[in-house]
Image 1 (spheres, rainbow, N blue to C red):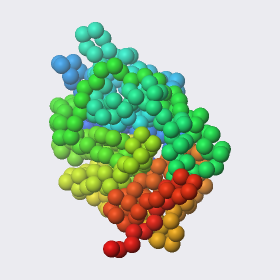
Image 2 (cartoon, rainbow, N blue to C red; image 1 turned 180 degrees about the horizontal axis):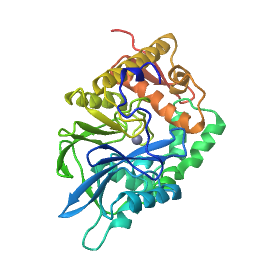
Image 3 (cartoon, rainbow, N blue to C red; image 1 turned 30 degrees about the vertical axis):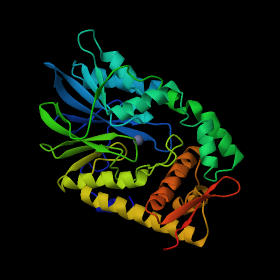
Length: 359
Ligand SMILES: [Zn+2]
C-alpha cells in the first residue's frame, strides 16, 4: 500500500471474491472480479438484485472483455449465484473493451422474444463502441501511428506494433448489441427498488456514466474514481486537439457533492471510503505533473515523446507506451489550452510545445 492509499479506507480489507463467485458488498449488491490479460490484470463487475417489468432477476454493471475464460466464469456465476433468476439488463459505464466486451454475448444469452435483455449505456459511448467494433476507425493502426509520430514517437519497432494493432478493439469487442437504452446525466434508475442517479464524466471515455445510490451511500464509480492508480486520460488520433485532462478534472469535482462516507465501488482495485480525499489526491497528482511538464517546456521546446520520461519514471512496454503517449499529449494540451504553452511544428513535422512568453 502506498502513502496515498493509506489515506483511504478499505472496509473489506484484502478480501476479494474468488473467480466464478461473488461477494456481497451491500444488501443486494455483489462484487464479481475477473482476470484481464494486461498490465492492469483484473476488472470489477457488479451484480445487482433487480426487478424489471414485473420480473425478478439481476442487473449487471460492466461485462469484461470477450474471451472464453470470462464466458466460463459468467456461466459459473449464472448457475451458482443467480438463484435460478434471469439477467434482466446489462448496464455499461463506458465503451472500453474490459467494460463492454461481453455485452453482446450477455444480451444475446439472456434475451427472449418477450423480454429483450437490453444494453444500457450513454449514446456517445454506444456509438463509439459500434464504430470501434466495426474496425473502420484506427484505435491503433496507421492513423494512430501517424498521430503518435507527429508527437515525436519515432522508434520503428513501436510504430510497427501500433500499425499492427488496428484490430485491437474488435478483437476484444467483436460485436456490440444492435439496440440500446440511453443513459444520461441525472437520469434516475430504479434498481432493486432503490433509486440510482447517473453521473456523467468525461476525459477518460467520451461519456462515462457512474451510478450513485443515496439510500446505500454507494457509488459505482467505473473508471472515473479509482483508489490506487490514476485514471487514464489520453488524446487519440480521432480527436487530435482534445483537452481530456481538463474535462476529467472538472468531472471528478461532481463527486464532491456526494457524502464524505460514500463507499466507492471502483472498476479496478478494492471498494473504498475517502472519496473526498481521493478527489484531492487526483487534483494534486495532475497539478504536480503539469508543473513538471511546464518546467521541462520552459527549458526547451518539448514533444510529447520528450515528456514521457518526466511523467512515467518506470520502463514501459508497448501497450503502456501507447497509453502513456496519449497521457503525455493530454498534459501538454491542458497547458496549451490554458495559454501557458504554445505549439509549433518543427522541420520534421513534430509538434513541440514551449512556454508562452508573458505579453
Ligand atoms: Zn476505461
